Amino acid sequence: MRLVQTCPLCDKPLVLATSHAVGDTDIREYKCGHLFTHQAIQVDESALDLSSVDGSKTARNYQRDGVEFILKSDFNCIIGDQMRLGKTPQSLLALKNAYAERTPCLILVRSANLWQWVREYKTWTDSLPAGIFPIQGTKSFIPPGFSAYIVSMDTFSRTGMSEKLMAFGFKLVIVDEAHSFKNTDSKRSQALIAFLREINRADLVHEVPFHCMLCKHQWMETIVVKINTMDAQRATTKRSQCEKCSAVVTQSAAVHVKVTRNCGVIMLTGTPLKNRADELFVPLNIVNPTEFPSLERFRRNWLMQSAQGKWSKVNPYALDRFKSAIAPNYLRREKEDVYKNLPAIERIFTVIEIQEESLKKAYNAVLDRMEREMHERSNYKFFDSIGDLMILRQICGMGKVKWTADYAEACLTDSERAKLAIGVHHHNVRDTLMYELSNLGAVKLDGEDSAEQKDYIAHKYFEKAPERILVLGMMAAKEGLELVYIPNALVLEREWSSADEEQFEYRFYNPDLEYLAKRGLENKRTTIEYIIAKGTIDEWFYDLVEEKRRIFGETLGSNWSLQDDAGSFKELIERTVSHRL
Image (cartoon, rainbow, N blue to C red; front, side, top):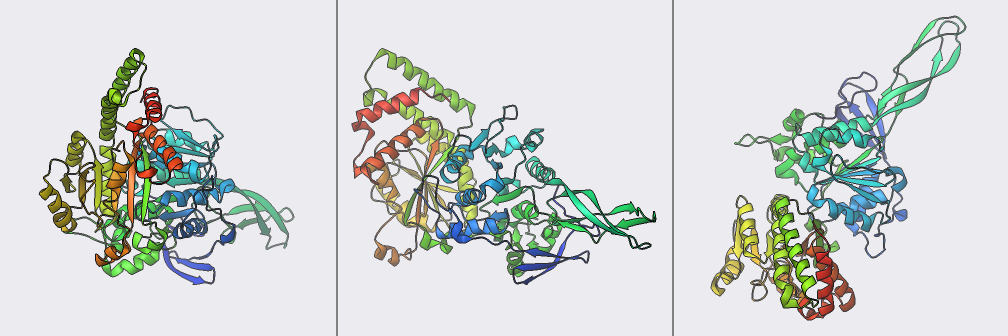
């Protein structure tokens, strides 16, 4: 299934042949022989609101450009920035700047990322209680009146769900991880395309002028034109009878109505062009069906087939033309393009939801045991409860493995050179993760390795190794390792001490610019991303640590530890035990 526009004059498939820019206007000629004009949208840059709801954050310069790109495309585009450059804030800030015109909004995400998006929406767009509603399951009640609704791709693609959502009259759809719709025959792709087709149908009331060739009488008649606003414009034909001489008059192709989409669409994907271009067909077809009307034509015009029969790579001889063809609707920046706008080291906190029911049951069973023990004693000594807390953290770590494996694959796809480190604490989390990453290739470094082995892996082997993922024991990586050549690190299991975490972070970051310049890393930027399991001890510990950061400063005084903070430890225990998965 794909989107196809038809010519409003001849009703043939509307396929772009050539386009010529004249000032702010594009003159577009189509293969059917007809020409239409497209007027560029003007944006008042000075009037844009690019701050978070509480005013504590603001968009970087390149993110400002992304917001303007979305607005100028009339919410019909793909943001293809490299991972962790902030595609989510760009889309939400664009929505914020056209809030009245583009709400209610529907957001499609992977199920594990749903709550992270809820958090980002409240940060950048609207923090009010009626701002965003998470839809969980096809049978759940969906209350009216919210400005945005968020649902997982799998739930959206289930039978009857898109029809249920049609009644809300969405003005915008934001699609995260748009490359997940790469298969044109998948339920996800078909559900999305069918939804966009249907929600963009409309009836326009239009006045048609009539002129009788016999008696020269002129009159106007009102007709209802049925259109799909995915089309650029639509012609109409009507037959009428002259009220003076009774001659039959037909008014047709000379009358057409220019329309805009009822529902815009922003597709977000980190898929690079050169080697995974086939994953972009569905998003490109959605935002520009006249340029990309069919998968067969897409492959024939732009791609080349590998020895294995795959059509994933853009033909190098057509790469420049391909970039030009997608430029009106596609924007991609890589980290190298925006270094000046990036901090030297940045912490990101990503909330995911544990999916496996077996892990949820195991987690709740530990909470039940802790609750019984709490009734038997009134104290909250660290060493009395740390065993149970470590088990909870271990279960949370296991619940993040599948998400992390998907993330690692996307990271390797996103860049042909970048390396990724993943910090873990427990051996079973490490072993399960290594198994999930076996098809990608990963190297392990932890406390089981000797000092010589650690030094060899970190300083001699991994930097030039074909493997691009390093699974690190958090405690083993605190000291003596220099990993500044790795730009991205994930933390699956946090440490109780802020000093331990900061030591781990600084394995990947060195503020000595002279040292970095000697290694050719003077533009290097480091991202440390903490993965938080929603509704678990992970989330409560995150809240606790961030509160301490506000009190003590960015480094927590370099000496804050949960073990030495009885009040915080009691608070963590009570919050943890009171929340079941």
